[in-house]
Length: 376
Image (cartoon, rainbow, N blue to C red; front, side, top):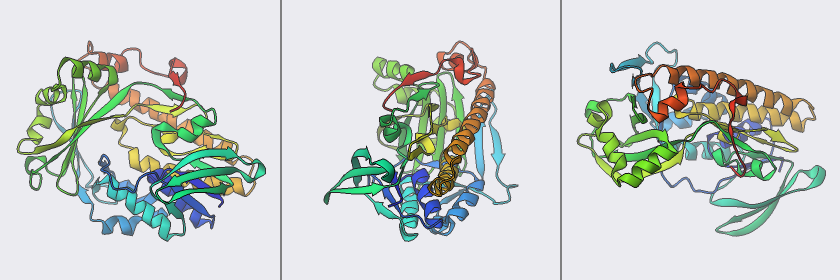
């Protein structure tokens, strides 16, 4: 094959779809079968543009996503502010069931001619001279080998392939998302169809309906603070939720499904986005704070850019990878400035460790001392 894409999330599938547009042979290697729940989120109306470009808009609409007229925020003060999508040329935004959305993108890539290997993992990747890479794969059906001229790392924040090639993951904070699902609340009641962001002393909360009449509720805070809180009380997450105002009122009459799941939500990136016959895409290249609300949209755009870059690279354009890396560098720089601006707007708890870390000595540049680690 021309390209092997490790990871079948939005960025990986967008890369595969873009490459298929140019006629390249592509294999997407995804560890799961898209059967497990994935954290949902709200998509802005502008997501229509990349979905149309990828040929995935009609399958997306056919999945009956839940329209969202906008979102609410309690940030920088006690008043609840609203932002409507009513004036956007594409209309409403969308509440997303991520597992269904990712599965839809994988199916769309497969129908476009990509080979999608579900339930398959990469055991090893070995450079194979001018031919690119030799991959050893394992699935329920056994083991196999395949050769790829080019590899795309779409493994999310783990950046597993890139780190194996010597790239280093750098983090700007230790933000985590402690996320839970609720059910049994009917059509939403007081929740409505708007996502809510509510700042609190120890971080901020996010809540939104999902298309199947469930609700996702997440506490965004620093890993050390959350660990200390859980050590002090097994009910730490519930105690923090009870201390909120609007988020707490949203879950009245709803039932919690299981226990909160904690995942990394930090700002991080690779020290280099590409190498000899490979590049990283989406969160594997650079991951943004969920406050940016750029998760899936960024992943789709990143995949399109990566696919275009690889097409140029396979066509022997020597500057393709450098141009791709420069574009990502500029994007990350703009993101850091926006992140600084939005966190600095909340100044009600200057003594709180969470807010002091963000509005104290603001991270104004990459050289401000990012944390370094290897292995994702």
